[in-house]
Amino acid sequence: MLTAMTWLAGLLLALGAAAGFLWIQGRSTRARVPRLAEAPGPRDGVIPGPEPGVSVAVLGESPVAGVGLPNHESGLAGRAARELHALLDCRVVWRALGVSGLTAGRAGRLVTNLEPHTVDIVIVVLGVNDTLRLRAPHGWRRDLVALVDVIAQRVHPRLIVIAGVPPLSCFPALPAPLRWLLGLWGWRLDREARALAARMEGVRHVSTGVHSEADFCADGFHPGPEGHARWGRGLAEEIVRVWGEKEIGR
Image (cartoon, helix red, strand yellow):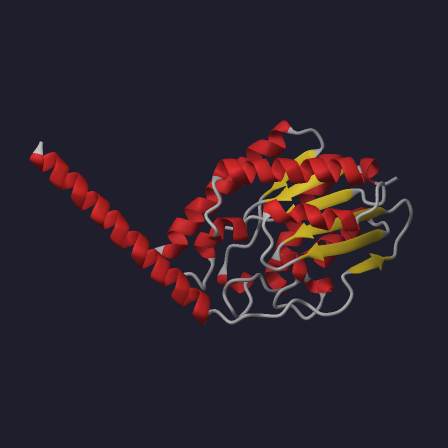
């Protein structure tokens, strides 16, 4: 009995020490990583092309806000729109609604910026900040359900896309073992998002393509132009695969 109690006490002490070390790693990483500004300039645009066209709004955290980018055309909304235009050969209207540091529980307020029946596709880009806050999976799922409901009821889009949570285990700015813990936590949240999309009509989940060091800005934490281009291409290809060219256009 004493041996078992001693072993349990040792395990609890080890877990406490690990938690303290991870907390210190998190603080030092936050202090070390440079703070990059959001992209300047217009957060919307029109890519000319044949009618009927397609309209897309991208809503979410720092990749949508264009953190570390020269403009929003090179951000996720602009890149996804450009890829849709190339695949569909039609007019594409796009809009970026992004706030750095946004979580799923606070994203609903951005939906009020969209008018009903004005957007065909809404892409939701969230998860990194919820991961950093170690949001419980059931709470994250509840927040996503509420957000999807708000989008559907107010905007009535033809498709809602939930972008996959980026793999934090690949973020160059995060040291080990912190990156492993956050990567696992983000994977768990992404699994909830994937399962949610599979159960809801008109909702799809699309994994992120941001994996290599070349995909990131100089801070090693936010996607750079190449990362956004790869991510936007993956989103556009999946949208076209799900709907097909004839079904998307109006």
